[in-house]
Length: 282
Length: 236
Image 1 (cartoon, chains in turn brown, purple):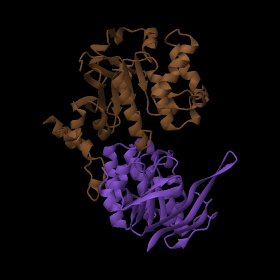
Image 2 (cartoon, rainbow over the protein chains, first blue to last red):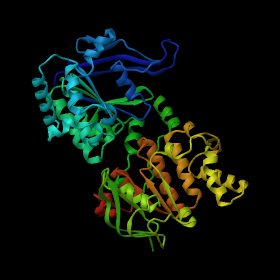
Image 3 (tube, rainbow over the protein chains, first blue to last red):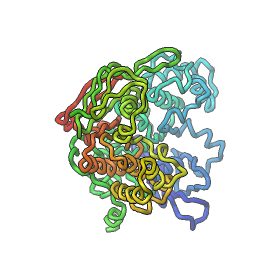
Image 4 (tube, one colour):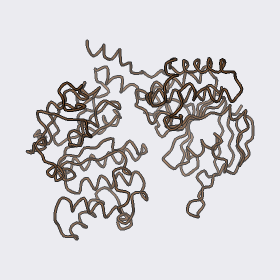
């Protein structure tokens, strides 16, 4: 497997305000992403989504990101101007969010917004654009194309919406896809289908996928590597398939607190922050 | 004895002039003291069924009896049943009044019931302790609590009425797994100490398998499959 990183993040910090004295929400975070699926896992508030927003240059003020290295291929993301960012996002670096009803524009038909996603990034005859859209809808397993293109976001189901968002994100062949809880709003069965679909496309297109999820079991099934975040830091990392065997107390607690048929009649382990901090210091 | 008996229950829904059956001739029987799970895809009818059992939807046909008493469609619960059947909703921030402190949220139903303020207050703080919160939480507003703490308040509110039947609609799906674990442990403990029947709706089959004695998989408003404990044990 080629190990040339598609995305490099070095010593990223996120603070509330520009001053050095401001307490960091993310103190110091580094990782590389190649042609693989790397998962950021952790509880709500651990800084997973904030990391993704910082990489995309989309931190809401007054949050400020700093890094010694923030690079997509040959491009230094920290030197990008606003218009260069607009050329990057959705073309080389795409973001997929949890809820398709939030990421799709409610007043535009699906066909119209997919067409816009192409037109924003390159000049190309309408016929070619239509062909490309048809090809992508096929690729994510959506039939009944004509009806779908005329539909508005409120007329489609969650699973279908998430397939459309994926098709839209892949239209411009991005190098890196950031998927922030892409399946948490879906039913269990659909979840597995959509995740397999994302993975298949990432593999065949040789893209990098940064998957953000709180579901460790799902990550263990689908990701190559996992970075476990706790209070803005990566506290544990390794092959995703080994998450269940991690020696780290936080990863262990997160993994074990997942209920199943096997845990019936037992008291589930509950995370005790004080004990955890003590154990992590030792 | 059966806590819940449902015979050929049908819940119609009129959508743009057409009538659709959200629940379609459903049969169900749940024994007293049981934890019964309802699972299925969105739109399968699990929440609608729970809303009929909770008395929030009275537009149905068929036979429903709760705790040995027959319900009549179109009629709301009598005060005793209203007390004995309690519900916990998915999103505690939507089910707690944001302008009232936790104490006020919890004490109001007791004062309406006719308890003196002193008695009601002591019962409120006992209930908070039972769900793992302390007196300081009573003086806070819902937005000053975490998601898990808010759900504990919602459970305390249900417990205060001393219910015999507790209906839970996705009580942990808005929470982190580590917080969910605490709530599930709490529910298991309360069920043992309060001898209640629990109906637990969740789309998470892992949660159902951990909690329930039996469970039903709903599809298109009918029970597609009923599973017992031996089958649930196999659930990863």
